[in-house]
Image (cartoon, rainbow, N blue to C red):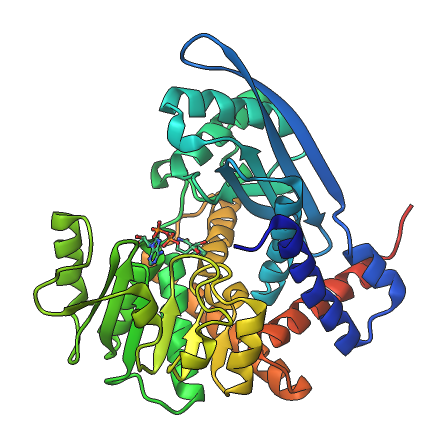
Length: 416
Ligand code: NAD
């Protein structure tokens, strides 16, 4: 696992490469090298046993050049200011790649949510909201769920914020329950985005989706929905996995039946119409499209030369290490970076915000149509940039993003 320092320097290196390719002025680079605001808050919280425990929370607002700050809040024992800063910078690029009018931010609380009760989590979330209430808001900074936070966490933030400000303010967060103004399609959004991007890759590589062999690592929200939609588009899902291991079929798996089996037994393994394989074997299976949808650092220098896919579509965050990325590029394997492939979630978050501000409710069909349009356009932008600069899709995506943010910074000027 990459340390937080090396993660930040990796993200920074990608940025520096893009600025060099674009020949950006030193002034603009200096502005974009650091976050606009980093806030660390101390959160004394009453635990169920009556004791007071003091937690540390962060909110890093990286850039507001293209619009209000946007980014998730994670609860994890390893959260640090450096990690949150790197993630806030990445959110800036992700929103710019998707051309949605947001800047980038990220937040987090250093805590172990698995060892806390719902009541403790609620108190901590409301404390955190109180501590950052003056720097978030519908036109200022809009948090969303991330690792170990969910729709319920967003409901608590929205409620606390609304009470502090004295007015119901649904647009202050996205990823809310539908009953509180959450969007239709938010749950399926990431998988939908992955499926649309895979379809565009298939057109680009002239490998029709019909009967294309697809391997999916991870069978949770992103993995299962991607697999299900790609099966509906005519692909053969030949292997899937979860944390206990994987399964492979020489013909194809029935995704719904695998889900039923997982619900019944707790895992995809031991599904009767397939053979069990390890996660390592799964990644090295011969296929057209490989979709890592589980954890970071899965395709590394150790296995990159054994990947047998035509293309890798990164549904997970950071599944490919920088070393592996170079190997795959040299081997001519197209890698659609996470900043684009997994951007369905943040895009539907944007739709949720738009619906809240306009007091409108979109149908699932409307959400899907708009998401598809944006994913197709961003894929085209990234591929065109990859051709223009003769770089990998990951570098191309960074170039698209940095160029858009830099143009905004330049147009804003420096005042006062
Ligand atoms: P999830 O918790 O719903 O599913 C994760 C899946 O990965 C589970 O099936 C789990 O068993 C499996 N898994 C865990 N360890 C594994 C291992 N060692 N090998 C193989 N499988 C393993 O999570 P999710 O929401 O689907 O997120 C998956 C990835 O997609 C993460 O990297 C996440 O950051 C990224 N992502 C998700 C969203 C979203 O909206 N859900 C948006 C953007 C990015």
